[in-house]
Image: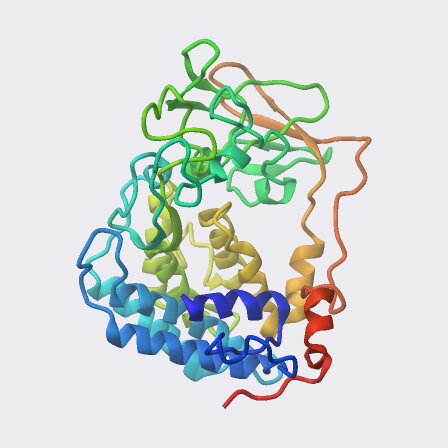
Length: 418
């Protein structure tokens, strides 16, 4: 957990101080930051030690295993290949290590993808055979805080489908919707279509989508996501929204849900292997990499990706692989860290993706209700704040002033950690 915490710290703030014993440094105001490469060396070393100590099989449901740690090592080495890049060329040794650990987890852990993507985010799905690491939440009663999951309240669009339901202004962006195959840009600037990608239904709610596992409080009917608005509406979040009080009676209450949060899934191992195989090349036609990439695609209901043949799309590129990651892990707290990993070795590429993401309001209209066959997406005409400007000056978070006042040496240049 310490290694994982430092992974989040270094990817959000850049150089940070490594503290192995908090009690020893509790009142140390001379503490300085450590360099990004040395922080990554530290967290990799920590995770390798954890992998050696952890058992191959969990002694109890939900406990971590060696495969949890080796899966994290696959993730760490893929990122570290960019951290220790030279002139935009990723470190090949670390790319090979990412492939090595990802393949070990794929072939030796006994884990497998769930047949249906949507089943990952229904209750109870906890500690299923695709999961490598989850935050374990329990429902401890209506007056016990801290052990239950409160996030569904902040994602659900209405108290009609949850105990609180404060997520009515959260949803998919225009840019993310453009990533789904079958939803295509039109000459008039709209998007239109439908997709075979089952991840959309499991992640975001489009007008007419049916969710039999969610019962509305108001009329006791199963949820058909409504079609509302005239010039803007939200494609609200479905992922991690598991139902109303009618669906969860006795095992949840307001801000207290029992279901777990994914921290690492087997699907990531397939995509890590494919990306590490592309490595410093423009693309790959490697048979194993394409097979692993297709494991994720076909589980989502999409046709197999073909490199050659009459219907082939050519070798697999990083752009296509990133698009797959964005859809597979949407709303799981992954996309930002994918962009930080890219930024380590190709900052202009990371800025280009961020600056091209249209995040403005739009209106989604089904061709019919309640069983639409396609949707039309139209940008809201009066909303102009559609993009951002990411650059080297605003990419990382600044160190808070409270910390700087207590430890002014944090402003000094970072040094290597032993």
